[in-house]
Picture 1 (cartoon, rainbow, N blue to C red):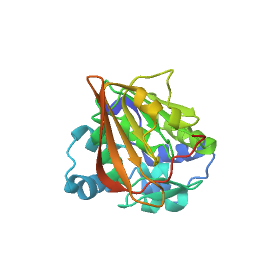
Picture 2 (spheres, rainbow, N blue to C red):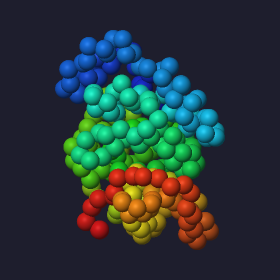
Picture 3 (cartoon, rainbow, N blue to C red):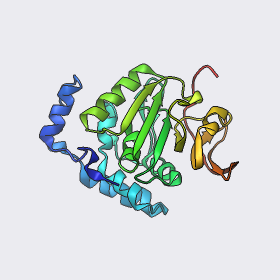
Picture 4 (cartoon, rainbow, N blue to C red):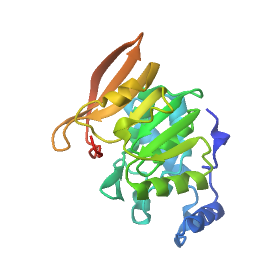
Length: 243
């Protein structure tokens, strides 16, 4: 991992500049808020390590990425809580533990090429970009895609490539991927995504009906064979598109 890939460790002055670049009036608390590093360290210790996650690259990324900049201003004070938060358009930013859990399952390293389906706020992509070589992230809602790209650019993430489109079909033109992370629930595992997994690749996807039980599923390609297994019950917004 190369923490110097981005400028996520922000001063209060840089935060104000970021808000201005996004066309948002800086909140009066911006100076006092700083980069909230203490809250991130507490989040990792209390919500993630305490539950048994131990991938040091992922833990370091979670300590680094300023989660509060990826949520709407009205939710910012709650950004480091142990729960998801709404981000508009019927979408959410996942609970920090779930983000870390999915990243650990992906087994990312500095050589990983990642496809994320469901950019949302852009936070999950930023965490993965702290570890991986390249993150391609897809979002079907144009407004969210633009917002996430603006934040990624402002924070200096040069290894995140944003795409607007239906993530069910993935990105065959840039496949294969070492990891595919899907952040919305599908009623079945999308065959196009399975086809885009590299040998040894891993896909993490919530599967299930939006109003019934969903499970996080790990899909692996090993020696040309595809295997899958259910892990933990979860609740995600549904994967949308034309499929």
